Image (spheres, rainbow, N blue to C red):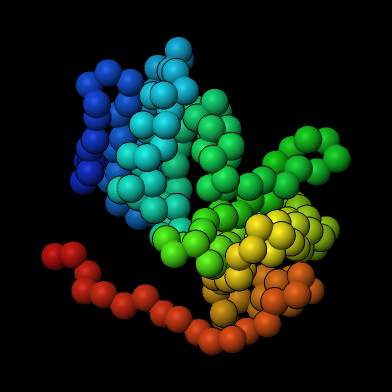
Amino acid sequence: MISEECKVLLTDHKSMIICYSDAPFPVWIWTPDDITEEEMENVYQTAAGNFPFDEGYTFDVKYELAEYFVRNNSAFFWEDGNGKHVVSATYRPNEKGDMLFLGRVYSRKEARHKYYTENLVYQLTKKALEEGYLPVLYTNADYKPSNECFKKAGYELKGKLCTVGRPEQ
């Protein structure tokens, strides 16, 4: 089932196996069909603690677990008129509780230029403000199409960040 060697392999020997090989591959999470809410929470906490959603990890999970992740407000999806998920974004408050980070905004190719992304970002920003947070949006500052969309949703560029580090050897 997994063609690459797992660099990280986590299990509770009962209701979850989590495997991560390397970028660009997703984190693979196996759970039984009859998983309980308590077990899903354990999987969610384990996944979020080891593979933070805002650091770019993606996950291959069963639909029910994906829905659980969404219900925990870590990810939001925008649906088109046919009920198909066309845009997604992550939504996470900081530890201090005064800022809310929006990130990992993604739209399917066939859904681009149809205002779905702008609407999702606008609604999440509105939700953050209503909940008393300062919304912060992380984006690729050099990717003009998404940045134009974010400007239409009310954002303006305040600075640029970069990630640096030493590659694993």
